[in-house]
Every structure is written in C-alpha cells, then in structure tokens.
Amino acid sequence: AQSVTQLGSHVSVSEGALVLLRCNYSSSVPPYLFWYVQYPNQGLQLLLKYTSAATLVKGINGFEAEFKKSETSFHLTKPSAHMSDAAEYFCAVSVKPAGRRALTFGSGTRLQVQP
Amino acid sequence: GAGVSQSPRYKVTKRGQDVALRCDPISGHVSLYWYRQALGQGPEFLTYFNYEAQQDKSGLPNDRFSAERPEGSISTLTIQRTEQRDSAMYRCASSRTKQGGYTFGSGTRLTVV
Image (cartoon, rainbow over all chains, first blue to last red; front, top):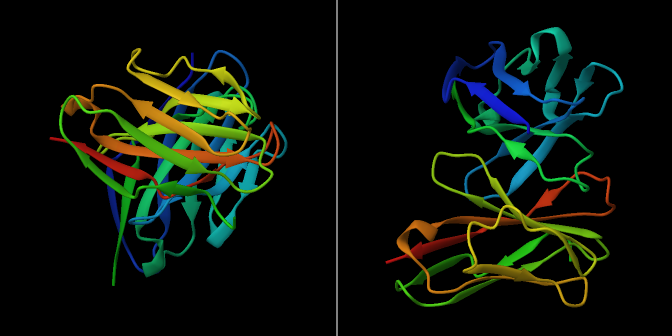
C-alpha cells in the first residue's frame, strides 16, 4: 500500500518569497507522484507529475518538484510567490500511471500569500 | 463537454433518504473516477470505470454505496439510506486514456441532516 504525508497543513509566505510545500511518500514499488491545486469552489487541477523520467519536474504556473528517492520526498517549490498562488495543494501517489490506478492523496497544505 | 460536469452542485437530504449524484465526463474520456473528500482532508478513492466496466470498487465504504456507468459515458453514484457521516464533497474525474492524468469536476457537496 502507498501513502502520502504533507508536512504543514498551513503555510504562509510573503509575495515574492520562495514557496516550499513538503510531501513525503511511502510506496513498496516505484511510485508515480502528482501535485494538484484546488482553488475555492473549483475542481482539483494537475500542477505536475513524476512518472519515472526526469527527477526534476516542471509544471504550470512556475511550480516545480524534485523526486528524491533516498529521502522519499517530492517537495513542491516556486521561486517567487504570487497572490494568485493562494490555494490548497495536494500531493498524491500512485503505483501505476493515473488512469490505471487510484491516487492516494495527502491531507493537503493551504498556502497563504501575504502582500 | 469542455470539462467534467457534476450535478447537483449542492444536495441537502434527510437521513435515510437515497441520493444519486451525477457525473458527465469530458467527451471521449475512457476512465472515470469517483472520490470523496471530507472537510480538511484530501480526496479518498471510491471507485473507477474504464468504459462501462467497473474496474475497482474497493474504496466504496459499504454496500449502501454503488456506482454505474452503463453506456461508458455518464456515471451515477448512488447512496442508499444516507447517514450523517456520508456528508462530504463527492468528486468525479475522468481521463482520456487509461494512462492519462485526471481532470476533476467541481464536485457535489452532500449534506445529510
């Protein structure tokens, strides 16, 4: 079975500051890893995904994440926060590509961006 | 359609009533997933379909929950004899291929009173 732990249910940064959202996974087989963003009253939107190719994955809106097998981590970063980045972010793991197997989600991290 | 459409957006029902939640995936999408999201939590898998075939229903909490996708397009999640603990956001997602990433709908907020 696989699981995801997101450290910090709430993260607050200043506009222009570095964003770092932490995700650690547990999986008995090589995982597929995903980050989703959820804006209020909207569905979850895929930010980026790791599917065993390059370990540094670039996504939409300037976000990127690095797969570190030795640390079982897949942290999400963005060099400079924008007010529009305020949302809830979910890390998810699958042992097969999304679409062939259910995703297991973390409990989410709410990002606040202060002016 | 342009996105995954779920209806109704909000549903308030009395305990003991049956409810049916509808999901209309993106046209041509092969796979369809149902998730449930409690307040302050991430989505939790319920079940999924490839075309009309239900591939995995291991996430359905008990036999009051069922889902169907009879023609490989629209899907209905039915909850019988609703209980207060069933209150949650129910999310549907679809993917173009069996390997593809999901597109989620906006969800149905179910409140059982």
